[in-house]
Structure formats: structure tokens, C-alpha cells
Length: 179
Image 1: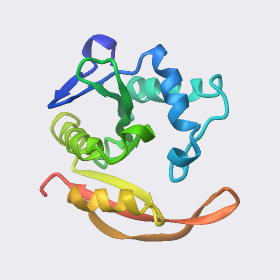
Image 2: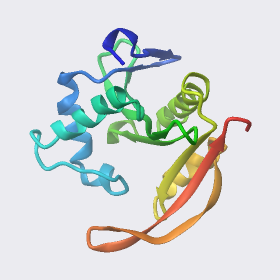
Image 3: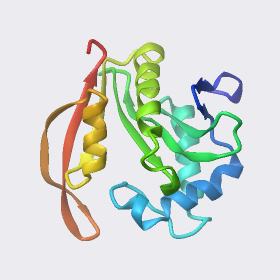
Image 4: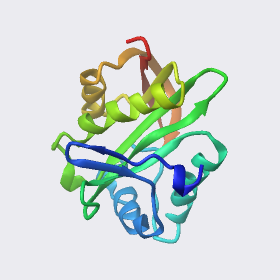
């Protein structure tokens, strides 16, 4: 996918656009903050290390394994966070959804506004049948959001990963195209 055909999505008060190099400072701000990364799968200690995340976003597009957007204000002056689809399987017509926001935008309904748009893009433009969300069992805010977004809780993978030297469990949520 090239910059020319990367989908830019405008909704009520938000803009979803491709990441640009200058976003690295905001990505670092988010993915180095202990409160934001508490339940997130990656974190970075330096701005230099954050280049790996920027490559991740770019590689998703190049390899056809997903798509992530920078979530910004409509005028593109305020960066709120990021959201998208990864682990895309064309064979099984499914992908995993992910999302994070800078703390100053928590509780403002950004996630509830953006997640359906990302899901619709996956179903309508990528031909997905299933979108999954893997949520750490202790992440009550995200679990509540998944329920509000009509994702169905399918079960819990108990002690399935090690994070910070401790086992964590993941709740599996999914939404099917037909729902």
C-alpha cells in the first residue's frame, strides 16, 4: 500500500490517517507511559527505540498483515492515539484489533467512536469475517468498551503469557461480520 492509496477516514470529530515520521514523539509519549502501557503489549524506553513501532505500522501495510491509523483531531493538529488491525489472516479472514490513547483523552468517547469505524473498514474493505480482541483480564475499562461495542466474550486463556515476570490471562472477544 502506498501513501496515495492509504485510506484517510474522517468521522464526526476525528481524523484517522497514516502515520508520518513526526508522529514518533507522540507514539513515544504514549508507549512509554506506565499507565498507558500497563495493559499494552509493547513499551519503549527511548525515542530511538520507538522507531521499531513506527516500522511495525509501516510493515503492516507493506506486508498486507494489517493497518493502523494515527487518530487525530479533524484539523490534524491534535494527536489522540492509535488504532487498527494486525495479525491479519487472509486465509481465515480474521484480524486482531488494537487501540491506545494518550491519557489526556481517556474517558472522552474516542475509542467508542473509532473502533466501529475500524471494524467496518476490516469487514467492508479487507473482507474480514471475524475481528478479535485479546484483553488482559485485569483491564476492566477495555473489557467494558468491548462489551459496549458488541464484541462477544468467548472465553479466557488462563496464564497464557508472561509479562513483567508474571503470568497473565487474556480474555478473548470477537465480533463477526454477520453481527
